[in-house]
Image: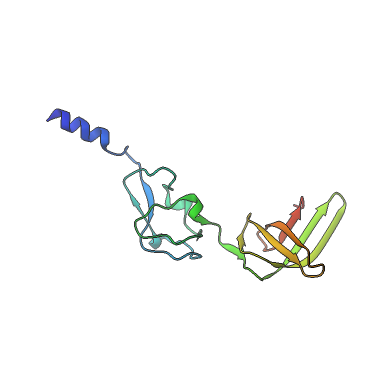
Length: 140
């Protein structure tokens, strides 16, 4: 009997170990709220363990009910949608260039997206900023 008890204790998840799962099926591009998340008492490698890490984030893929939520499955909410007009900014040394562009993809704060300059029709890559503009090069 003692051997079985010891075996069960060894196989049990560590105290406090939990994994974040989807409470129901969540479509891609949905913003996660408290009602969308649940936890299980098990540790799944690569999965998130705290609800705070997912609240307010956007689902990048469909999250199925009862499945673990991984960091790559979610991200910051998109500020820029495909074909949206955005401000471009490029700074190099003392030179500052501002232009208007059209986003060729979706992205949230810190995401790299491609943008077509509407005047020159050139395509550049830049980082989405908190105000919805896209910075190209080493501009702040």
